[in-house]
Image 1 (cartoon, rainbow, N blue to C red):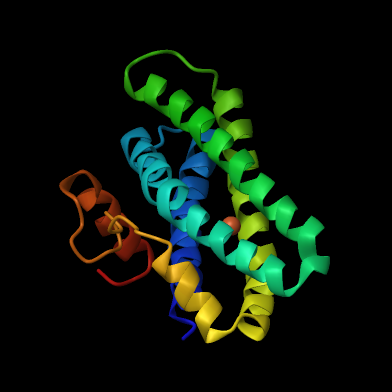
Image 2: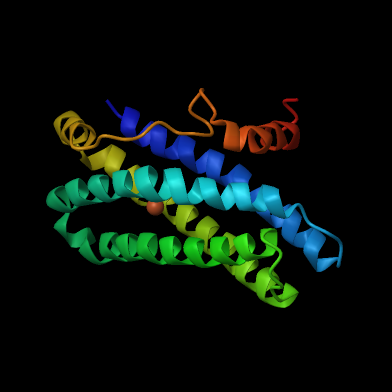
Length: 184
Ligand SMILES: [Fe+2]
């Protein structure tokens, strides 16, 4: 019955792996070496596709269900929805900077490092707060019917990276994730 929460937690583990890739490339950039910009660009393309269009809206539905059961959580749940909007804006901003680099436009190294580090930290903090807080509350307080209704309200697209049928544009990224995880 809690399959929808299981999936959200699974998504978080996948996202943590992607943030690790970004962090490794930012470390490279900070050492004044050449990072793999196309790979970073792939991570941001994915974040704009699946998390922003599927994962976060799914969480928002769960939070609205939870709000009906636990109205006293309103401030906390509202904050998380705002954080989703902030993450979406930050993703667009960082993705735009990386696309410029890939297209040969000069972008300041310090801007990339600072924007990238803030982005990774903000994403991690947000997911940590959800894992340790509202996901547990959702498991505790939402009924099977609440979760079924939330799932029925949602018509997701398939995950183009981790969903089993990886799109060609993300094939190299999946290989990098598997190598980083010691699976390849
Ligand atoms: Fe979230």
